[in-house]
Structure formats: C-alpha cells, structure tokens
Length: 248
Image 1 (spheres, rainbow, N blue to C red):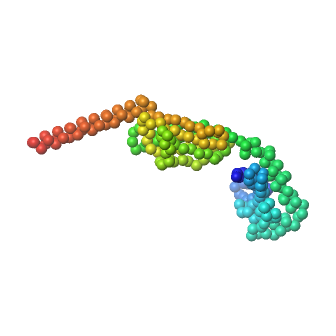
Image 2 (image 1 turned 30 degrees about the vertical axis):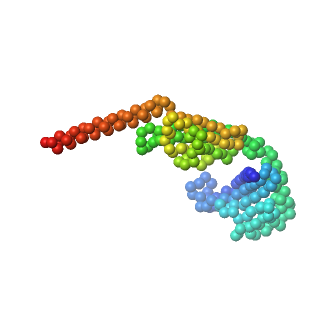
Image 3 (image 1 turned 90 degrees about the vertical axis):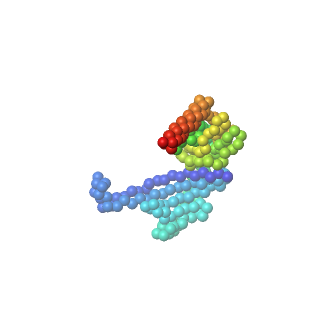
C-alpha cells in the first residue's frame, strides 16, 4: 500500500490596496488568494482522490473532494461553495479531474518520482569524544538515496546493537535524501563493526565494515600504560613526601 501526492499551487491574485505604484514599503494591506490541487494515489492508480482547495490569507474556505463529489464551504465560503456546485459544466470538469488531471499526470510523472530509485552511498567515520581522549563513537553516513523509506542497523561482529543507537530524521537533500546514524558506545579492538543498510534501490542489504586500526589500538594502549605509569610516579612521590614529613 503506497501513498503518493502531487500538489500544484497557483497564485491567483496579490492585490495591494491604498498604495501608490512603486511604494512597496507604504502598502496598507496585502491580500492573497490561492487555488491548490492535490492528487492522492493508493496502490498506483487503483484508487485516486482529487482535492481542490481555495485559500484566502492562509485560511481554507472552500474545498472540493472527489470522494464527496461537490464543493464544501467553511464559514464565509459556504455561499461560494453553493455557487460552484450550481455550475453544471464546472462540476463535470471537477469530477472528471480524477482521470483527466490526476491519472494523466501520474503516467507522466511516475518514471521520475514513484519509479525512481537511487542507491545510497554509505560510509563510517570516527567521532571524537568531548569528555575523554580518543574516539568516542562511530557515525554511519547514508547519503544520496531515493525514495525516503530506509532501514539502517549497527552490528558488533554478528550481534545486532539496538541500544545506544541514535539517528537523525531522514532529511531531503535536493532530489535525494540523507540520514546519519550514530553508535554512541566507543569501539573496542579487535571487534568488527558493521553498518547495514536496507533500501528499495538495493537487491540485497549494503554493508560497510569498520575495525580499530592497529596503530590506533596500540596508541590507545600506550596512552593507558603511560597514564598508569605517570599515576604511579605521582603516587610514589606523594607517599615519599608524606613519610619524610611524618618522620621529621
């Protein structure tokens, strides 16, 4: 079951009252009237719904819904809706718009929208910790994919990690989408970490693997040893100072 929507907006009139030509900053009032047509599709063109909206200053006052079959007015738009419904030619055009407008445009636009598939590019990077030296997290960047539905999972070896995983919303980026998924726990050598992506453009899941570089693991170990030795030296110096002070 899929839902797609195609919307077009036409600015009908933008009228300035009480103003002289060329005197934009001195406008006493700006009024906006808009007509918007929407096509809603379910299971391709199996079920199609046309919705026309009349909007005045961001307030919808008349709506035509093909499922209802006539215009419906809201507050001050009730009389306007009655007038539209009393026009036989207009009503025939509106009711036929499901085929002449929605289904027709679906066939034209579907190859560039509904049927369009763009596989994601996936990469893993280290994110430094703000509270301690060394890497603090792994970031999986999933970029330039279409359509939006996607699933991203983290694995440690063969075990899926469901905790300490934080993801952004799927963000539009021009004609594609992007997503960032952070594994908050620091990576541990010599374990292998995998970011696995499932998307409609892929025949099988796409996986990217990452493991701590040997130099980074050795550097981390040496840092730990250095810290332990330095701590021991300060402890010995402090203990010696304390004993001398006590003996004197």
